[in-house]
Length: 128
Image (tube, rainbow, N blue to C red; front, side, top):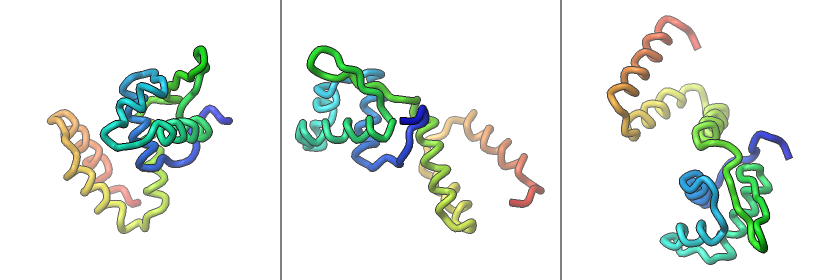
């Protein structure tokens, strides 16, 4: 297994990762409890955790007769890599509309908007 997580995250895996990121470390029972609103069985959650470990997104450490799961990396690098993969897969003319969609949907602070403006201003005059 490599140091860098590999493979994209399914929606269900991402929901499990959010729990692990939020808790820092989580036993399967913690994730099962947090996943209760999704109606997932304990075996479904354990399968998702096993898949995430196989893909390198979580590290599993045996504690007694159970496992303690910890994210292999913080959420930002994982999400950045997912967006990089998306941008590699889309046609060039779709990149700008996708970025605009993200900006419209995101809850951004004044500081973040200023940083975005600076990035956009820095891009002016440069070709793709």
